[in-house]
Length: 106
Image 1: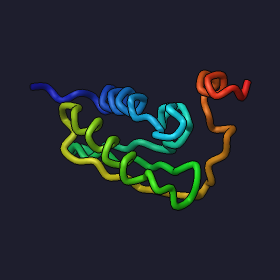
Image 2 (image 1 turned 60 degrees about the horizontal axis):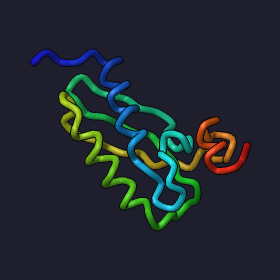
Image 3 (image 1 turned 180 degrees about the horizontal axis):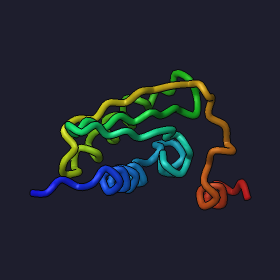
Image 4 (image 1 turned 45 degrees about the vertical axis):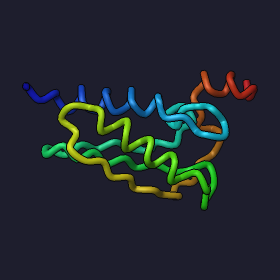
């Protein structure tokens, strides 16, 4: 099978991240603005740099497993690593316009 281009792989990762819901808010982690960066190495390792709405979120383990499961469904992805950062801190301004409406912020 031909390997997808890095752009197509990144789009596939973004599509999968849109399926990962914040367990409390019911909004995807993508639309909440929790994903800061996606990098995919030539050997198929996907590095997700992300944050959480609060430091010490007790649901991170659940979110992390769902991210890993969804990303590993993509052909050409061999491993997933998550770099959890809190700088820059998450703010509600990072929420997508669609999610802002859904949350009643607009």
